[in-house]
Image 1 (cartoon, one colour):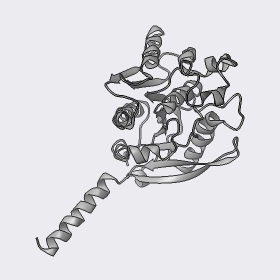
Image 2 (cartoon, helix red, strand yellow):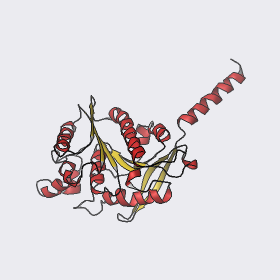
Image 3 (cartoon, helix red, strand yellow):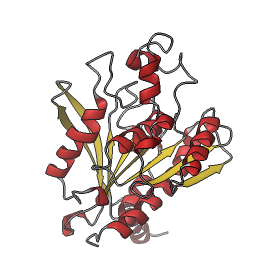
Image 4 (cartoon, one colour):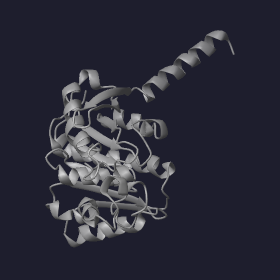
Length: 279
């Protein structure tokens, strides 16, 4: 093969690569006043961002022991969905074990206020966003699945749709796991904190049709049973929701697959709820 043909093929390959991964990935530093510290986040904007007016935002939460960079490192295909659906994805840092609560026993942990208030305001100030629940959704995996539903249920004025992948949607069966007791106190000593902060007990906050919901969990996941129970309770209350199960365990193979359904679901919600500049 001639040198000229090699250069042409390389140029074509680079061009295709740039097209596939045209979304821009920024690591930003935000400030939490309530926790008095700086917190990083990943913000992914679509290739059409510069020419667009405003874009819907998906807040994508990591799990226990993770951080803000987990999603872009372990499921990099989310960049393609950002371009395809012309949305912004924000991956906050929720701390090693925050569970996205404002901890009632440790005032240093206020990740509910950070994500649902401080971060959302920062993103709306610094990016071209749809500044209403019609243009905001939140989802996540494991601890982040619980966190996404918890935050959306408590802040329906902020998020219009919420999802969960392998979410710990009932924390009470796991009193010794994942440092939850450090955020809520020991279950045996402060059971009221656990009862008030578990998603499955918060369905009274829902009005049917007010919050669009997608719940997803693998059948081999240790959280499968609690997700089944959440699904049943939503049915009992006639609360519309989408519920997905498929073979799979609590791992990145499952989440890298599941997130594409979450983002399509959020895109469809945005399309129904607001007109988005096509860029």
